Length: 204
Image (tube, rainbow, N blue to C red; front, side, top):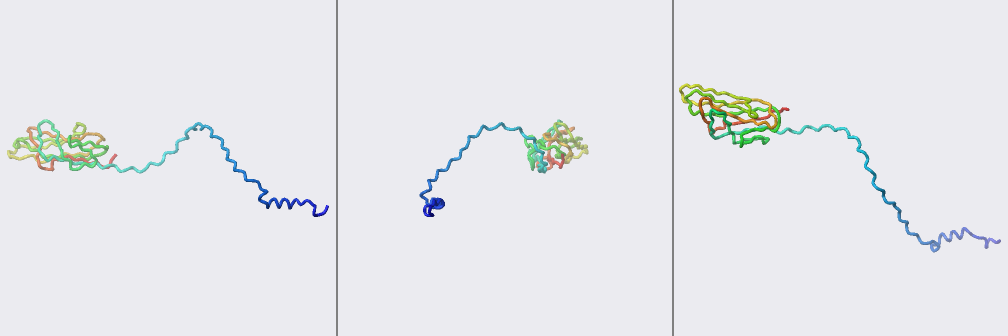
């Protein structure tokens, strides 16, 4: 066989590779096939609780202090009478009730409590006694007795003050009471010496 009639397979392949008309059309992409999701499985058991974190710093403790006064006159008899202090001067933690003249602490702790009045007896020339008390939950915790003997001189009692340092529980009621013994009288009006006050010390 002559070289001219020899089957040239390489030439045919090369010509087919270069002839774009001999390439068939591109098939469209096959869309992905996704199977449907199965049902959600049952929730597993709760794992163990982790360790407790460290305690944060203690927040600030609200300050507790108040002062109330009575600039008007009030009658005091020989029966224990609640002394009224209807005019608050300050009340840092909204613990004083001026309508009832009662201090109700919101925090337990150690408190300084003081009350003072200036009594005026109806009969200054006779022997008499004036008693001032601080009550907690209806029970006296502190009292002072101010005696005055008859010196045949028309004088009056000086201011009477009672004070204490006392542990109070949150919700206790603190009030001031007074009475005359052997006479009746009033508190002197127009003075800031008639007052009721308390303040809390840093304490548990």
